[in-house]
Structure formats: structure tokens, C-alpha cells
Length: 347
Image (cartoon, rainbow, N blue to C red; front, side, top):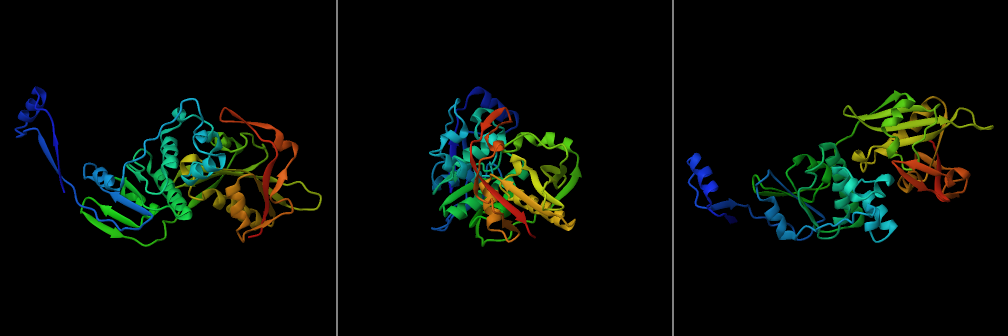
């Protein structure tokens, strides 16, 4: 397929071309490879360098949805219901409540990318320049979270275009069209790359780097045992445990803080970090308990053989702590009675 563009031969254009002996009559021709995609698929990917015809090919699947954001409304209020906002924003790895309640114009570039993506994800969506504006670790985590949501919800015929080849193994598309060679290849579901995290003992002072991203509170117990979590030398999370005072339990600990930075959410790292805390406490001969209001974390533990529900699991938490107002990232979030998940790590 050959496309042509025409520009006016004004004086500046003529002089620029003449300066380099370039014979130009105002016409530019572009060769774009043809694409015959499968009739049924969930995720398709067009990949190739800039100027290779990706956007042109993408248009045969439809036009990208234009997203409008109101300046004085939170990003979560742009969805039909609170449940939809939680599901869609979480689906692209944007799991930070303090981010949800901010207006779009104050978000970081990576947060804006995920918020736009959350509103675009639907049957038949076309998404251009996928992950082009975020760093590569964010691209990987977002690709993984997005693919997981598409598969889980059974969405169909979603096509992405990108110049980055490093997301292919994280997005796991049903087909990939490489504009460089003009070849379409179909793929089966493959294992994604292994992620290795390091948990490095730290002081309570390290919490300052992560406090604004906790979904409930920026406070921390000064006696907590703390770890910074690193991925390939980059600090991506924080974990802390504290002793659990009890007249009947000896050497018992409970989870105190678990945070994964927003850029790295969506990969399922939070639950793995939580499991690691339990393994370390058990290895020292202790017992490890954890409570959470996070439905994602709570449901993971409900379905994991590593965790056993306690008698207080999925009960409404009505203690005074749940009725306080916690200051987080300059937003005051009021928590009335809320459902609380409660588990013991059994290994």
C-alpha cells in the first residue's frame, strides 16, 4: 500500500531542499505494508519504528477514542459508578486511592497515561503510541495489568500500536505485526519474564519515600521492622511489620505497611511482598497475621493456600481506628465502617 502527502512549495521549503540538492516537487510517497489480521482475537499489536506506518495500519481497526477530562473533577468521578472506577483504574495498575481523587491535570505523565487507558479499554478499542510516554519499567507493569484485565473480562478485538518491542512479552498479544519486515505472527500464551525482588532491611526513615502512596495513612509505628523492596536496583516498594501484643500468642507479628510505588503497580508485586513477610516471620519461629481493607489483597489471600482466614475475616471493622480521618497526599480521606480482611500466614 502506497500513500502520498502533498505540501505547498513555498520559498523556505524550496530553499531547504535546494541547499542539499534534494529534488522535491511537493509530493512525498510512503510505502505501508498491508495487514490481514485474524477475524477473532482479544489483543493485537502493531509494532515498528516511527514513520513505518503503524498509525495508518491502526486506522483500519477504527479511530482512537478522544478522552476529555473536567478540570474540577477527580479522575474517578469520570466513570459511571465507584465500582467501575475501582475496577477500570485497577485494571491498568493505577491502584493508588490518593491518585484517584485528584484532577487529571495534576497527575504525572505516567498516571495520565494509565488514566486515559482505563477509559479507553473496551471491545474494539484502538490505542496508539502505547507506553511511548512512560519509562520502560512502567511500560512493562502497565502492559501486564492491561492484558490481565482484557483476558479476565473477555474483551475482544483490542489493537495497540507501539514503537517499543520490549512490551511484547508482557502484553502477550494474540498476534503481532512488525512493520519493519511486514510480517504478521500469531502467538500462544507464553510465560512472562521472571521478576526478582530484593528485600533490603532498612530504618523507619525510609518510609518517607513511600508514605504518600499508602492507601490509608502516612503514619508509621516507630518500632516497626522495615524493608525497602528493589527491582533491578530501583526502589519500588516498602514493607514493615510490628509485634502483635497478645496474652495468648507468643512471638506473633502483624503486617503494618505494604506499599508498591504507583509506577510499578499492576504486576501483582504487593501480594508477593506480603507473602515474603510471612515467610521471614515463620522462618524465625513466629506467627504472622495481617489485616487489610484492600479487596485485591484480601481476595488473593482468601484464595491462597498460604493464608488462613481468622475469625474476623470479612467483618465490618467498627473500631475507632477505622473512623478516624487519615491525611494522605494532601487529601483527607474519611473512613467510616469498612469491610476488613483478616488472615494468618500459614506457609
